[in-house]
Length: 247
Image 1 (tube, rainbow, N blue to C red):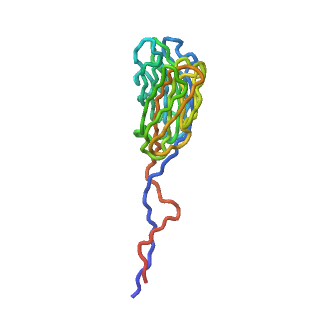
Image 2: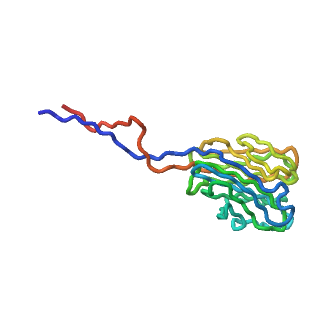
């Protein structure tokens, strides 16, 4: 009696992880709102699994923490607060995000305030489209400090870290320290500025450092963003499972 010999290709779906990549940056008016009023600027995005970030620095002159997610729109769409740093540093620092901002040139608008508003923006592709923030941290140093390091703990493989920075009376762009790469800095004052890891980071404790040659009272808002995980896909080419063999 002969036994049948058979083979079967086993097609098991598995997730594919997209790589985060830089897309674009933009900045608001060089002098912001010149001390009062709204600000707006345009930001152009492209690609898939898009993710946008808006950094706003606001003077503490009025002593009011008054910039909220309701004040900021990207192409008319709402944003979400990542975190804010409102310690007494003569400046408030806010970081907002938007998932899947519309492609092409879109207007980022911030509602009118009675104090200075300065802003920059950045966008990425390959970012998780649900719960994109893995971890956040804030830090500040003063009254006179030129270097500041902020640390957080990541839990997801292949995160990127990002960092919003501001320094009162900096008047020049900051420099990147360990774990940081400067991507954009507002042109007139060097405030606010935006850094990233420009690549994946290991899970666990991750730090980013920025340095100033002038100014005082540095503020940080740091976050880790997750890579997108696509839906089910086929197995790698050549995957073969032997289910039975005999004679």
